[in-house]
Figure 1 (cartoon, rainbow, N blue to C red):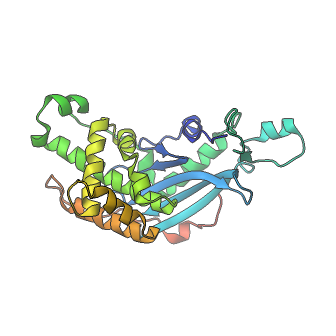
Figure 2: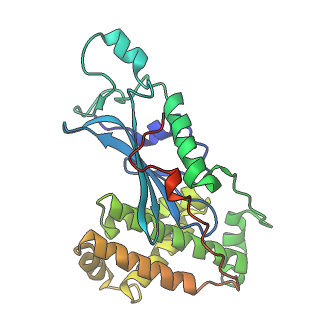
Figure 3: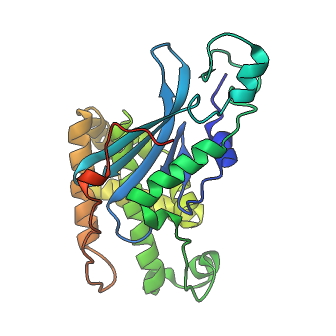
Length: 277
């Protein structure tokens, strides 16, 4: 059966305004120009399609993976009641061995996992816990469809941020084993969830990202250019995405002063192999 990841993370109810689910993986990006990214996925056991917890990964757009934590279902009593009712056997795991039926995590108690994830976010990405505020003179759908958007600096800045979000999604995907093309395929929905923009604006962000990646205008040879990029090793694809994101960031539509990257937590404060209880 499928993992029903979207429904799982909805039930988990993480307090991150920027959170979204792509495939079976949850992503969150702090507001502003933060270089940090948070990724949460189901942690596989040595047995195929069996999972014993969640794996959290904090990445930096330039430095790569900063921290990885394994939050086991058993340690956080996610399925304590289910396992007690079933009696002896393999505990604290879920399996997606069948195509039909209820979600394999049905009946989960998610409080322990939620608290552990929030604790990690406070260490690495405290900005994730701050609600996003928008000082916008009109709803984005109105600004987009009723005003001449190409001369509206606020809309252009928003689209610029949306394209940066697409690059962030594509880069994060390379750490999950997805090619750039696979990540770009549904990037418009990611933009819609992350920034609250209409789907057509998400498509423009996709187009801008592809143009930067391929170095050419959209046209008959775009598909071939993306196929060539996606045939490269994932680390090379990641480097191309990072370079394209840098070029796009340098062409900001607003006269903004770049802010320094936030200081990273002291290495001594984090033990990458530690678990959160």
